[in-house]
Length: 129
Picture 1 (cartoon, rainbow, N blue to C red):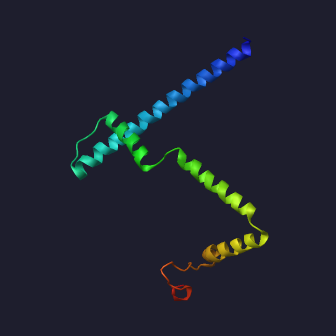
Picture 2 (cartoon, helix red, strand yellow):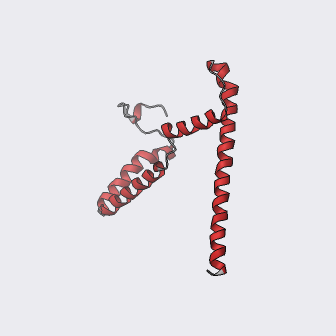
Picture 3 (cartoon, helix red, strand yellow):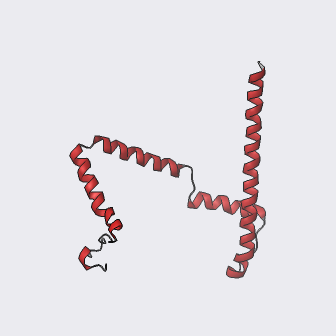
């Protein structure tokens, strides 16, 4: 093995150790902040017991699983863009112009200070200026 290959391996190993340490610091910091906020607010407001650090970390993980922040969220947004781009490329020039004019009629009203008509059936003329 050459010297550069050994250096590359040790470089990546050191980088991996730094990343693991940084993740541990962030988990510790967010766990401590969550625990502190919980113990400061929740017992007085809701009458629940204070929690320790590991319960705080567990609640953070549980809330991430239940309420979002999943890695697939950004990936799905990218899939939507890809599908929209493919749909746009399949449109004829006339369909593209019709699509643009439809968007402009809906969204360019904000720049003129008007609100778009609501879906509840209120017409544009009956809204306040």
